[in-house]
Image (tube, rainbow, N blue to C red; front, side, top):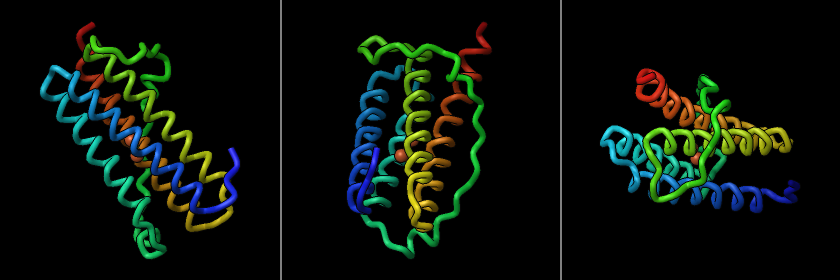
Length: 150
Ligand SMILES: [Fe+2]
Ligand SMILES: [Fe+2]
């Protein structure tokens, strides 16, 4: 994908964040366990913050960002994702959400690598790490509740 200007790339990222907000909304409605529902709503809040950051972007805001390195457990990388449906169980929801976050990490990494503006590189690096942290939280939950039942 090629972006010619800043506005296009930001608009594109905002649309991806809106997708994530919607997806967490519908996943949280399907989640039956209160713990999972809370996690999905917490992640939805963070996607709302991403959207807000992108919409109200200033160079001061970018300067104040502190990217934190997140771990990648890579648990979901080896799991097969079922299409989203009304009957998603705990495990399906976690795999589905983790895969979505993995795609978000890849998107922001690609945007970072294709930008030659240091501010944008910093912004997308920050976002990539945030999405990686989301994937981490989902995979920790998976590890606690799914792997331990085996
Ligand atoms: Fe996000
Ligand atoms: Fe995310």
